[in-house]
Amino acid sequence: MIFPPECKVVGHAYQKPVGDKVYFLTEYLVRRVPDGFELLKVTPNPEGHGMMRDIIHEEVLARADETVMYPGRVNQHDRADMVRRALSTKKRCTIFGAMDEHMNFVLDPDLSLFQIVHVYDIRPPRANLSVTIESLEKDGLLGELECIFEHHVRDISLIDADVYPCRAGGFSKTLDMDRMEGGERVAGCLTGRQLYQECYGSNFKLIEICPISAVSEEPFLARCCRKEQSGIGMYNGFFGAVVHWGASPKTVLDAVYEMVQEWRRRNGQDSSRSG
Image 1 (cartoon, rainbow, N blue to C red):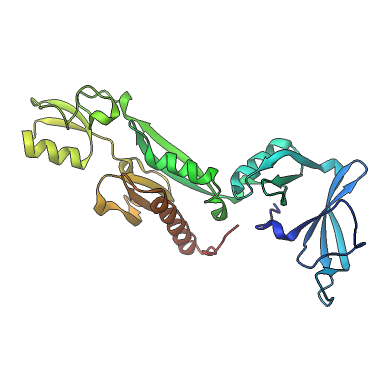
Image 2 (image 1 turned 30 degrees about the vertical axis):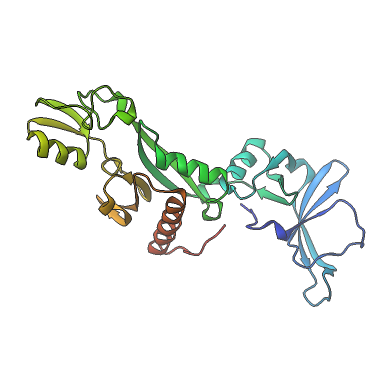
């Protein structure tokens, strides 16, 4: 797959106001031809002077019958989304226009080159970590990492329990609002266990719902209500990052970058990889 990390290396040759010269930073050229567009790899003269240079070598990477101009504008910072869109066209080369009118392309799209990151969360109420990751992706803030996020969100309302953690989830009987009688099946975590034991004793059955307990693949991101669990490292034999229950988007963003960079460093990859 060829997918330039920055649009500044992609030029277009719709007209030739200065002849066959190209901008000195240009590496790829989208050229209009009678039956559409073709993609070229070009080498500007490195010994030339000025901003516009003669081309000393050019190579056709994709012919017009292999190339499509994607309709509409896309967020070019959401790189995984662009690869998915490129795959949907069934063409070798998909050219994209951006909201700021810049241009980029994906040649021979391949999502297998992206790192899979597993996201573990629960609902109700709102699966804050999962929703935040989706929002950061949509805004293009995670595109440089070239990751795909697989979400594992457990719906705890489907658990056969007598008691649930809190009223915020819309449950009728909860640890935070109701008095326990003993013998209940409680959907909860370590915090719920401690609360029940301190207030009512040990006559209950805990059904574990902490997202960390569900982790089965790495690298991962998970949410936990225990502040001391927050950080990056090994959890139950798997490497990942844990953020606190109400972590801000900035905290989640930092955790994703730090975790992925450390994962790549541990696995001998370029930890500075940015697309």
